[in-house]
Length: 232
Image (cartoon, rainbow, N blue to C red):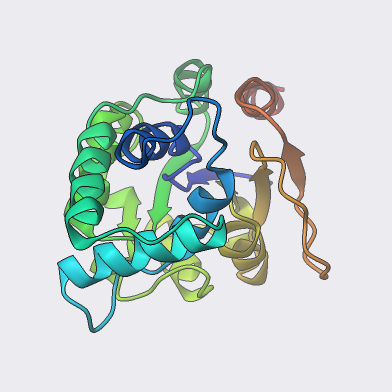
């Protein structure tokens, strides 16, 4: 029986692609209709940590994303300008439509939490911008930096079990990334709902999502259905 619902943050609670495209397209002088989906997915897959300086990482991460879409490399100046514009865009993010309504209902019946990779200050700024503090207490928000563990390591999910004082089978995780969210949560013994709003192919494997939804309104319906189950 599910007793807690835990969320990923980036591209799960809000649309991360919009600020990415809005920051990058003008700098590259791309036509309005240019689809940067592949560059966006590659950018997300690049680790923001490592032996490089902030400046070096900004350049390497962006150029790796551009190369995936056969777009020429950019200079350090442009990469840093993108980083600034992207960070500014992330300060204006909003929850996907329907999530606030669903969260209002969920909070009445379930413990709620967040597990997210990234720097604590950076991720908490997004959480505050999204007003997630209305539904989730700070002690139920875990970042990879503060725990020393990062998805897809199942141990970060196990740590959340202890924090919520629940068994693994009593928690469900909701995220947009199959490998980092679905597979990792399932390995930890959790249920996993895949918010596949980018319409990505599921890799071959033994880890099947318990539910898959393809847009924010399907996600809202799924969460409201959980509420209905709790009320019966």
